Image (tube, rainbow, N blue to C red; front, top):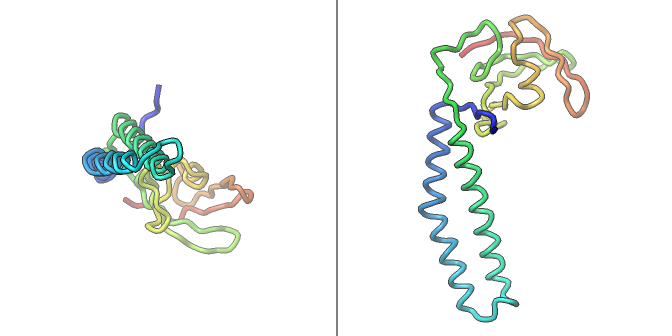
Length: 157
């Protein structure tokens, strides 16, 4: 059984739009590229044909991934969230105890994670370490470079 994939309504809509674009536009372009390469002659020595087939395979793999994510999506009811403990969709202001730097991150599902937007996946080492912690608690997080301690300064929506 596949585990559920937690998303915001916005995140689910984004996945659906990408799937629609891939199935309605990109698939046709991939088929056209294969047909053009096939028309160029001997397929056994046609690098363009091989590249087009590889691109089509990658496209179909991404379509399959998106379909799986959408089928297993569980949209989070934001009205049921609170700020007592850290949970998915919370904004968390944390302080690195080693270097005293402060940052604010939002915990999201894997497909919505984006470091530039300061969105961390709940499945990441830091995300897992923060889950369930309360304001004022210290989260000791196992990272690839060792244990890092973070103080939970604030939890908001």
